[in-house]
Length: 119
Image (tube, rainbow, N blue to C red; front, side, top):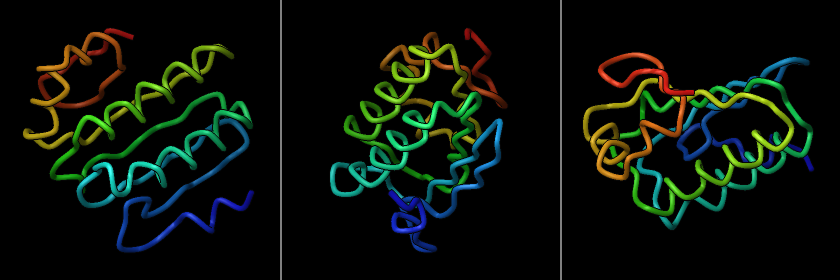
């Protein structure tokens, strides 16, 4: 699979910076049931390659629904199977609140702001 097929300047996957030992995925716009399959495809590809460190940038994501959360939970589970790391950062307050309500701040490593690393 070519990751470039899933990158789109208007979202939901704005960019994927893939290096040998890490990847940074920049998401854009609302992550909901209409676009979370694109995010899932990229995350499955990265975890299939067993990228040791995957960083997900949510700086430009104003809203995420349960399908977006489920996509990230699945990615975290896949990363943990090969002892990799998944870090989420740049959460806007509205998205951070969704993570807090779902008690996902205890599951994910979240950098920046009020949430702390519970890795």
